[in-house]
Length: 305
Image (cartoon, rainbow, N blue to C red; front, side, top):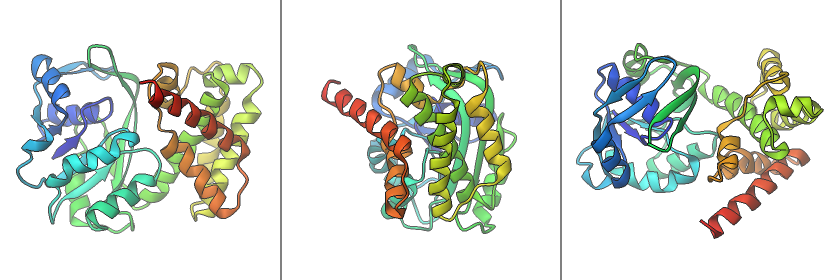
């Protein structure tokens, strides 16, 4: 298995897989490889801390295809990652992407064809600290994967043997595309609310902004409906509760990155949702405002790195 990225997400799940004895190699850039070879891969977690000596490879060293490629990078680094791991993709390789939004699927299919690309969702709250350690911020840790057409397959059965029992929740799904839409709607609603209003869920609620957060959810869901993926009332009720919880310190990685002055996944999480809304003729003024604001932030960041 090749894990593309040893950052907050790939490093966490790949590290747990390696800890469980799975045959895992991390594809990293030279600077990260040097850091990991010098000090190991550190995970600091409520589920247990660990320091590993991971198997590493840099792009120029990939000599043969891998059976599985777990893709766990920030969406704005995907173009570079596609070139880096291309030599690892062969006739039988399964690519399991754990990125936000849906835009990455078309990019993967364009580069590698329909056959290798599965769907995937991960749920985890992790960050890299100043020492390069992977710090888990909350207890949730789950991956879901499956064929995009919902079919059963030998490679999904293989993943069912490989991923569960590795220190995190893992399961295949016959509705993986719908699962990806669920996460996207939740993340776009939460990200746009916290970034537009510059506060955590609890701070927004305390300032009287709950109605704005719920309106953002409605806008995002309208795009999912038009795209053929209406989401159930049980899911929507859960997200409404998350968006309006009193005293909640919840905030997505997009908001944490914004507060830290780092790049954000605005094009993939918000921009793509707005673009799809426009294709369907759906008005999403709040979502568009959040996307515009973050696009301006991103442009300024790029101009003054």
